[in-house]
Image (cartoon, rainbow, N blue to C red):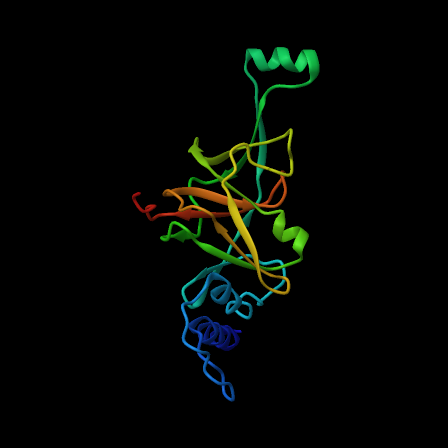
Length: 200
């Protein structure tokens, strides 16, 4: 297994560096476009179907751990009245145990790769956690379950090759706790951004 992983990283490094393999002619020198860069990772993210990987530079850093969530519902006096009148009101949350993720990421605009079908890839949503009471909390959108998060973060999802997808926040993220999810009831792929967004 160790040798297989080492070989995989070597192949990924070769693909991401843009070097031609044996028997191929070097490509003409040109500025690297986003599409070109993303296409080179198609083998790197082809490790296992439906596993989300954090990509950095010329290597796969880690598989993103998916954590189970605990749904919560909070209701104030006004929310209780709304529930009695038309079964509305209240705030719904997803919570994850612990105050931080096992995957720290220094860069503010990380890239993730996954091999999956189009429907699943386009179902991903990005949300931010608040940390309190020893847990991570994200308010959810019960009225629009496909959106998952009450305050979702714009996420770019693009196909690098057939069924190989790149996910990345459209804007740099501030330091904090974040997660990627495809279902309102979880689980979520959680990560921590430790770096800082560039000043504008």
